[in-house]
Length: 274
Image (cartoon, rainbow, N blue to C red; front, side):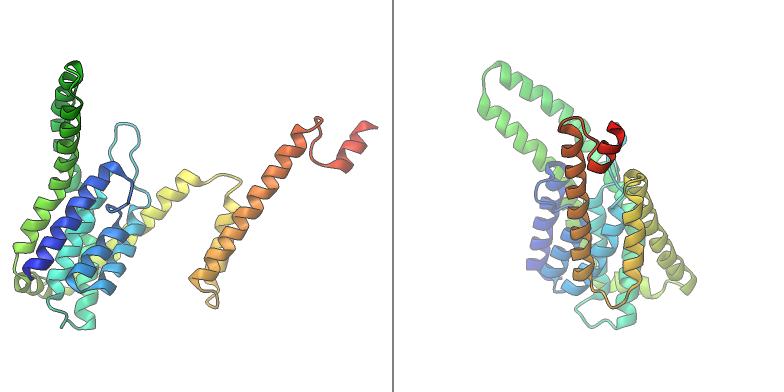
């Protein structure tokens, strides 16, 4: 891997680490992070493929109360770096490319747990930084508060940038040879496990969103997805239209029930008056 690629990877990793807390530009999302790593290393197609697969897994990851979700930033950056190292300089066959992506998807989950441990360490250190900022506030030192704020968010960036730089040092021959020596049952098991984890991500999202009002939309989505003639753009347009129709009907029902105490059904109101 060239020095320029390593520097660009570290920059992307630093931004992904900060975005895991800031959550403004979504650099920590797998689809964005893996795509950027793929672009700076010359593997954009593979990066998008890996990012899309990991994004489906991370759909159900969310912080609930005091429980912190797995770290999507480290999972995305580290798995994409391992994929790039396995692919080498672009001379890998289609089967080797598929195995590299599948293995990277399977490694993303344990990497996300490791990232969770690192972010817990950073959050523990941040408590001391918060006390230092309180001291600056008592002294009316606004510049000190800003500097500590930058230091705290920079610490979150370093927790991804440092492991990314360490992974870039690993020779690509070592990674590719290790993946090639993996037995078929292990690589196949990783492929099945990665698919199951993606299904779990979808299930978590459905569990959070499922209501009696949304189940018809889920059913329509599965029906439309089975039609091979429809492209993703067509499915997206259908989804937007259904959402607009739902919001329009919901607004009409609310305005009808709020005006004059009617139920929104004029004929029903006339019959009820008798």
